[in-house]
Length: 287
Image (cartoon, rainbow, N blue to C red; front, top):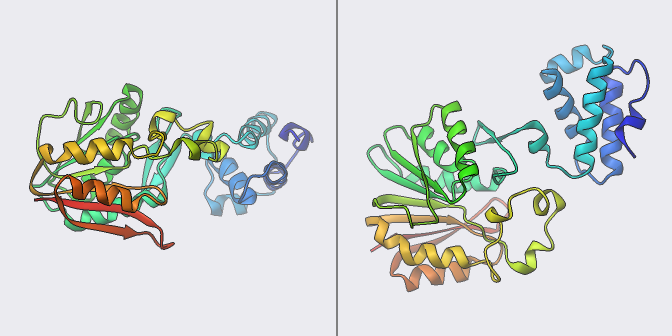
């Protein structure tokens, strides 16, 4: 059902509009429909949760109702909420997002958390496949005094990342590069959340991901390991002695990625699990 059919009264209140939007989202299979409807409405009207509760009996103007209905229809079509809002939150920071970049995921915060445990001022970091820049920008702001480079093959993604760095006052140097092709320096740490979805898994993704996230940031080859093979083989040439390589992985990839690191002479290989007990990070140290 179109949101326009739910929001066609002349004087819907903010509360009535929010409830109608939630019903439409739920009918189209959107989880957390109440929360998402409120998030869309509060963002549109620039309301905090407190403002929303205070003003819920206020009428919506015709223009406000029309825009809200349009946004609800977009979400019902499984356009990601973050794309409609134009932003996402990661490690407490706000990031601009677009169809050119992977939407920052909460699970990637684990990569940042463990990187920060090993980083200190004066160290150098490279973030490969930076996308929105969320990893590089976050470690840069959370650990002042480190030198941070970030690379991506996509010029469109780098434009988004540069805007995010400016917005968060993060001193990150961005490089357009297909993995290590344009990288000349050596680093104390290399971080990456590379594309790791296999060919079979691509068909099982939620429409929000399959139809709206850039395939360039998702597809990791037939077995999902293409980028891990290239990164593990070439990272030693760009790591200082004792330098750390830390990568996010997909489900069931821990053994294969650990083996790749071992075959390329990494030591101290660790598999780090997330709060759900799933293997999420593989890390190794250059001998």
